[in-house]
Image (tube, rainbow, N blue to C red; front, side, top):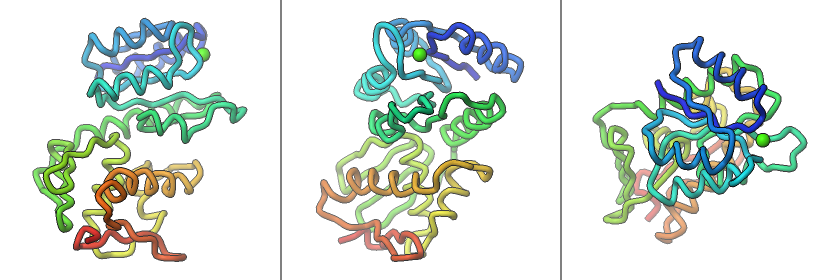
Length: 226
Ligand code: CA
């Protein structure tokens, strides 16, 4: 597994590199944003660990530039604890997950492994609800003939909702299936993702496939929200 770490704090970068190498990852480190973007575009990484504040180009711009260029390598963004840099913004630029500094090394490895597992899914099933279709093996989603691009995490949330189409699923169910079972962050992250999915798969098509069931969770309509 090949990891790109984009981090300008030497101590953090070298500790992460040593630690990940001990876990069997092959690690490249970029100390500036411009180097990080270049490496990410030139090489085929399995996952990218991306700091936000970087010389040259910040993490948000790197992330959105990669996504706009069709690069869907899973990205874990490192955010600051002081709240100056918003997790929602990290996700909006196309990151798949974020970790707040300072982070425990064990948690970093667990998150990376979870991202890699999700990215490597290879079932051949196709999920359908009305004209909403999702193909896990190809990591592709369509509304009718229109293909929709989703981040790895958005894709996983939609995949889970589609796999349970017609059922009410709780936020806890979604967290347990899409995030790690030992997820310790804010469960409201599920709302953030559901909102993002609605903006991608429902609103542009004037549909309401993802329903909120008050006090219980969400239900994806089997008719795709027609
Ligand atoms: Ca930094």
